[in-house]
Length: 372
Length: 129
Image 1 (tube, one colour):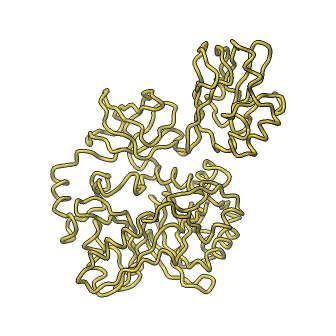
Image 2: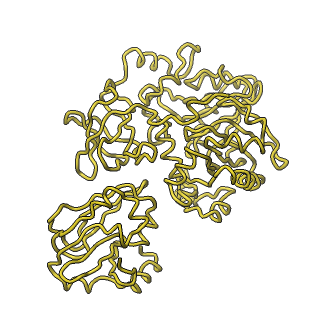
Image 3: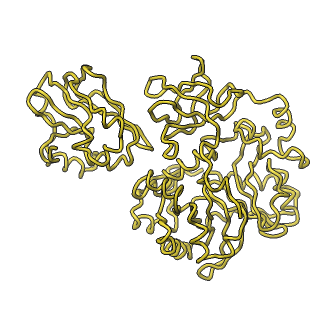
């Protein structure tokens, strides 16, 4: 690992600055935290449309006769769900059942997969998959440096995308299609990290600015605005999506992260299956639990959570929820059986503030109610 | 409503408007702009003694919490409950509707330690804000 490395800039850096982006260092990438304001951007995604530069995300290509075998072995989810043209959200597991990363694996064609990985973990994921691929007929390539990516999200997005990529609007959730944009081979998938319907466009750097400008232009009648990482975080937390490195890591299993639906125990052998079977049978000792304040205040990561005076753990992610208009968070609590509505207290600025166990997702946007 | 040029400023971005034995305190326009959308305000307690440069209230944006320091020592003589109910006022009207509290000054001489408008502008420009 390089130390004190220069902050990396995406191909859209100049475009973000010109659009009024307030740039910050996000895990070594210079990205906009906001444009006009987090609340405005959050509301745009929930009610109309918005677009994010997510070029920091990584792209691994897995190809060859054993590509399915490698992904099926290393993932918690069942890759058989990823038929050609479809993707599956999954957890890349380590030998302890912890998460190497949370990913989306798309099957582009027989024996050809595109795996979208987190920015900070792309090298780690590449190394992990490469090591697991020993004696397999498979090629793992890290193409993260070759691609930019934008996320166009919000209930108005399908209507505006009719004008840019009508075939994309026919995609199911987690569907993916190849598409020529500005003469370059790109991918459009019906995915996102906001809880709203929308698309992610993966494209070579050379054409991403053209694509961004076209999205901005087409989006005008649909009240589309550029959005930053601040809104992306409040949107994903309301939707119950994990932030790798914060809510999920190598030391917490998929069951502990309360993502049991991702684990397909009936798919045959895979990494850490025995451990996960045992954990499913015996139950977890700690679980990522939703917490909502029942009085005013803003919880932050690291705030301690109490139940009947007993400390249960601390919040991993926490913020003000613009949709619920109250403080929300998730944390690994050492009382996994707590029911929704159970009273809790969250320590904020040295004071215990009333809260309760809240169901996750906190809010279900159009991605959860999606119908073609 | 005082004009931005009529109030004094601290290095921690509070403004202070002195009116006789009492002074009104709020967050500067520059600070609210830097913080972004304000979603929570915690006021001091009524009649609480406050000490110059010590935190006595909290203003929070979506992303972060920001301590409000007493610009001068004294005792809290009034609180703006309206801004606690509607924190977005800090963004919309930092020098008027979003005044936070009033202090009855115990040492009026401390006021001269604060920056005037020109000095505060210079302070911001130097990037110390």
